[in-house]
Length: 167
Image 1: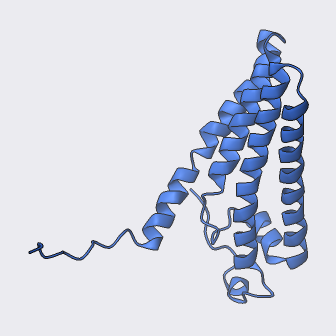
Image 2 (image 1 turned 45 degrees about the vertical axis):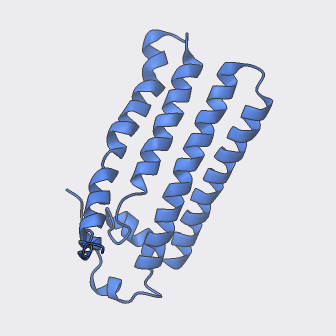
């Protein structure tokens, strides 16, 4: 005879999960600061190791941008963002810009890695590919934001222009 099964405990509510991912998305800032540090490091230490520093800068930028894709797409960060996502044409153009950048970075990274003759160029190409993957995550979030905030599909945004400001 088997023991009586207890019903599974419910998982976190979507709002708690969304809050958790929103908080995790703030890790983008330390990652982007690390990318900035690696980007300016050669200016202070000389050009020795510039390819390694550029690779790390690209990797940390990709991680930071990828973490930013965890933010809640129902919120806008500022007035400019709200205006872009509410306008169907501006939003579409911005989505195409992000998609083009992601595609170019990923293709350039893969092609560069394939044809790289030395290790430094290969690593730099993989860093560029990582940045492209981060942009791909950003594109997914941007699509969600555009669909949620469009005035031609969501008239509620016209009554509530700014959903949320971040602390």
